[in-house]
Amino acid sequence: MITIDNLAFSYGSVPVLKNISMQLEEGKIYGLLGENGVGKTTLLTLLCGLKKVSSGRIRTDGRDPYSREADFLADQFYLADEVAPLNMTAVDFARSRGAFWPRFSMDKFLSVMQEFENDPTKKMNTMSSGQLKKTYISFALACNVRFLYMDEPTNGLDIPSKTQFRSAIMRHTADDATIVISTHQVRDLENIIDPIIILDRQDVLLNASIEEITRKLYFDYGTTLHPESLYSEQIPGGFIQVYPNPDAQESKVNIEALFNTVHRHKDYIKNLFKA
Image 1 (spheres, rainbow, N blue to C red):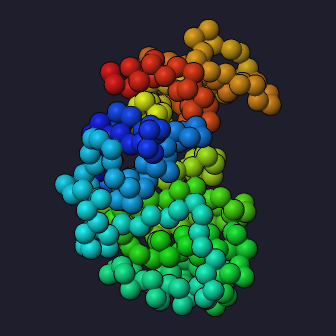
Image 2: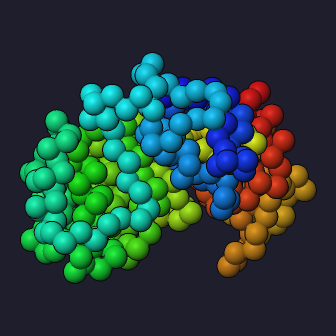
């Protein structure tokens, strides 16, 4: 369990995060969404202990990530958006770096690389950006950690690789793992992230499961605009629109429409999901 209480962080005199509070439970794949500059990457680096909170606190299983104790670090992995093209083969990289994670599995690394159709004997500084990203994703999954933080992992991946990524996340992470994925590419992850966090500098606008979202909001793909629509967008053949769901009717969440709804009605959404 990760508990975040009244978190604030600033770069010098420039505030990035304020009053952030939420809980992240084990066995879930969280999608971390937000506009540019709201602090998604900063939050991930705070969660893994690379930065120290300005005020408030983070506790991961009761421990402060910034203490960076060896056994704590051995149970987490942070995959940054930008990854280094090292002058070594992927398999040599995995063998040398994997020693820092007690549950690292070379067999799993090679298996995921194969699923990605990625050559482990190729030097990383000769790989394309997509091949390099897939190498780091394969390594992250092979570390077998309980806390996995990924910043824009599908950036640089082609369409088949994005499908492979979704499959790899579902197949190669433990049932008790807590995974947080920051992304702008919501369609890449729409079928695997649950719950969804939508971050704002002043607050967490939404931290809810797909089941809770569909219980409180209805996603309509019809041809007639609803009078209580909170958000609508024209699509071929009609509209995608979002409106209150007092009768808890079932519908399929459209994450882009959800994101736009939340940002147009911040106070309403916060009150709706705190009720």
